[in-house]
Structures are given as structure tokens and as C-alpha cells.
Length: 168
Image 1 (cartoon, helix red, strand yellow):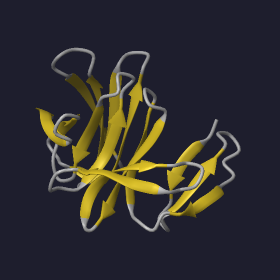
Image 2: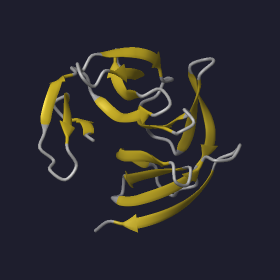
Image 3: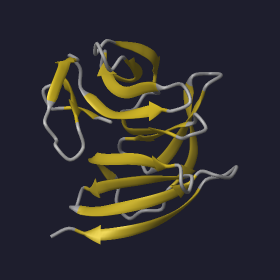
């Protein structure tokens, strides 16, 4: 398998885990905040800034061609993640809220607020674990601390636990 990423120069790269040799596929020409894979459709998605707005984009990993799926609300989306059930979750910048895509309206809807002393900084990431149906969201704060949230999305209403990590 491969790990795909977009570097600071907008290059789509593929790497083999363990070797980590970069294979550049192409230059996407846009800033990309996050990428996620929808296993239900075998499709890679990313959130990118197009026309000064966060957009959900569908990405062809072979050619690097991308197309706009839909805008993602008025704010900046920093993290996105698909579950094995084909549900798309997102975190908007400057907030501590979990959002979920309504595929009928193609709009993000607020699902829950997180209780945190500090708002997340732009450096953050989400990943989904099919073993326990949990989304793990890690981020730095504006005061150089870090938090990890475990968001259980198995039920009708997501729940979470969190751990804080002081960074020295």
C-alpha cells in the first residue's frame, strides 16, 4: 500500500510505509488541508481552498486530477474523515465542533460541541478506526498544548473522551 500526502508546495506525493521515499505524482496547484479515503466508494477526497473557500474535492490518485464536489460552508475546514459507513465528518477552523455531511443537501451540519479550554490551531488531523468505530482527532492549541479526542460515532449521537498533553 501507499500513503498519499500533499506537501507545502502543493505536490501530491505517494510513499511506501517504512521506506518513505517520495514519488511525486503532480502539482495540484491548490492548498490542501486534509485528505480522507471513502472505503465504501473506493474514492479519495480532500479539502482544499478553491476561490478562497473550503471545498470538498474528489481526487484521482493516478493522474492527480481533482474536481469540486461541493463547498463546505462559510468557514475554513481543517480536518475531514470518512467512516466505514460512508459518513463524512469535519472540523472547522476556529471552533471545537464536529460537523457531519448531509448528502441530501450537500451541506455540513453541526453535530456536537467539544468542551476544551483552548481552540484548536490549524495543525490537526483526524483518522478513523474501524476496529472500534471511533474517530481520533489530534490538534495543537494556540498556547502550544495538544489534545487528543476519541469520538465514538457508532450511535445516533456521537460521544467523546479527551486527553491533554502539555508541550514543552
